[in-house]
Length: 267
Length: 311
Image 1 (spheres, chains in turn brown, blue):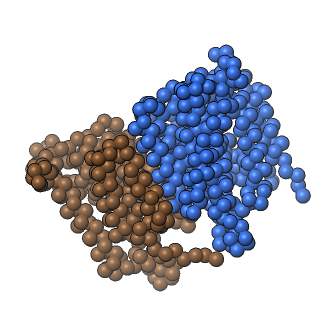
Image 2 (image 1 turned 90 degrees about the horizontal axis):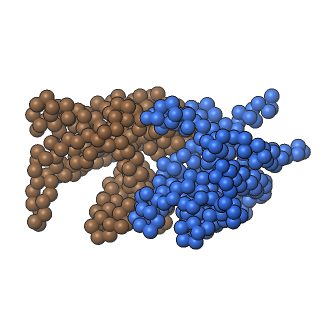
Image 3 (image 1 turned 180 degrees about the horizontal axis):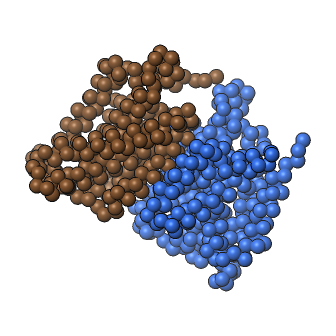
């Protein structure tokens, strides 16, 4: 949508908190832990449907005409607000829900124990990534969506309900962030500041891949993940900034990211 | 042509701070000094903003300046305020000159994110550096002035007055710069870079110069903040610090060189009040005020003044 959205980090955190607290409540009532995965899903969906339309309809839709950098600031402001909203709702104490993670146990790969839960994460990523690619490239809705992003004015003239497409896009995007948050929640302790860390990492991912490119984002994520793991293993001293180093290096060679599209120049 | 009265105005404001500042209570001096430090950084950001560039990594130079000031005390026992600011500014400018060759090629969101990445690299380096105190940072020596150490009650005033002197000079110089051909290129670059190039000017060079000036100002601001607070840590390079500076620059607007200082002071007041009233939701208050500002005063705080003046 040509929005660099800092609020995305908040949705990740919101998803994590919603997932952690809802699953916690689910397990505390003694309901079957096997269904906790569905609860994580519902939590992410619920929290997105509450906050995403509110933010898009209430604030962002009046801002699309503004400069990209200004929109970045607006989402930054929203991010600050949401950060405190999270603290108000859930407090500052960490949440742990290890059950969905522990339940599946682990399996052996080449003599190393590997948690099965991570396989679920990978599967989810593939399903949602593939689903999104299919939605954007092969369905009528997806094609219209890309048309709207490319030129809202012409789309409006052609009779597309542009406002609705913006709303749907923003909600889907936020939903993905919330899902990521809620399914990561069992593997970490959910604490304030979760959003800050993830958002800068995700920026690095999309910038490496090229803004607005789906394969780019996927490749960027792989690069970031692998580089980070390697540095943790071999060179822990550089772990904190190796991602930014990679990002700077990629941008130095390909100024608009790996899978960037050519920008038309305005004379 | 109307005479430019801004330099006179700048001089009046800062001379006022210097001559009557000692009447302020200590805590207010602290707020004013920090506001001047942040104002210097925001002044640099303003230069870049005029060219349509948002640097999300000005904290890099702020932090460099602070650590330069700290290192002077730690390794050479020097803690003269002016030496600290000079060192901070020089170190930041040197780094910016080198990094500028890379950054001056980027515009828009990429400029912002690349500068953010660079400041996060510094953050990562500092956190892992035991000699410089890792995540805890270190305390820096009490401020001195021309080799003498002011009495305990006067330290804050001495720092504030020195800050005001430097800010006065910086504001005058930047104001002068804005009216040079190179300075006047900024809005043109924002408007349409290709036309700028057709006219025979180099947008890249103009951006590079602005970037170095902005970094030097941020370095001075960082050194000043370090000596005022008495402690430095890697958080100064974290991207949320850059966010604060952008907040101030947007709050202030780009119309006048005094605006960043006014913005920084207002930010300090909002921040302190919000923290005082509800320590747990100050971020929310900041976020909401930022939103309201962008919506109702897109030209910044200074547009209030100029609107009033035309009436």
